[in-house]
Image (cartoon, rainbow, N blue to C red; front, side, top):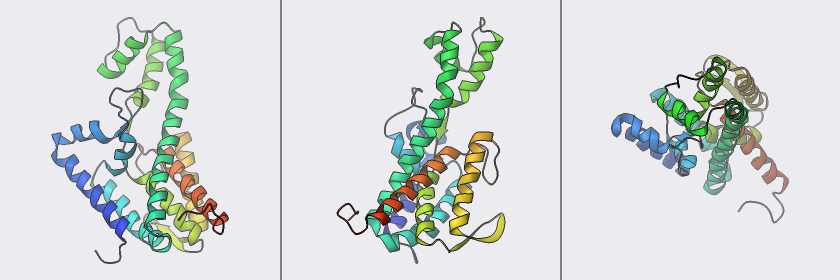
Length: 249
């Protein structure tokens, strides 16, 4: 592949293989059960999903846009930093994305779960209704309202390399603050030092309000924020310590 660095190329290949597996093995559902990141309270959660979900995608457009961004920004970052630093940012951003998204889920889930238990429901009853999608006949309207709030969190799954790529995008922006970027839906060139914080701000607004701007409504916005901030702080630390013994080698 012309104009692409080694680590980026291998990441794209792995993502493509996983996507083909999603389409061909078990009708896709089995692959998602195994490798998508499920909410840790859900029995479908497995520790390896913390990493494997970074190579899973929901549909063709999802993987197409992510791999295009990985090629465009990842190649530029890897050419400057080298494969080791690039991969360190990539996977650290992915883990940062997990931390932020799961933290956001727990922040919303735990108070609701506590209210459900306080209302008289047992843990087994709550899990039964979350997993079977059937309500117990004695459930009150208040309990039903709480269950409807917690159900999508308990059954949430996260896929995609977006968190990793947001970290790489942040790294690119710090290395090239005056590079002009633009969205496909908003073809106006904007300097990276304004463009990237603007994208993060939109994700913050979307995470709080639920209002989507340029991405599907089921986007894990907090994962984007976590990935971008992780990439930013790693680059900031490296720049700050580039001449001392703590630098990345």
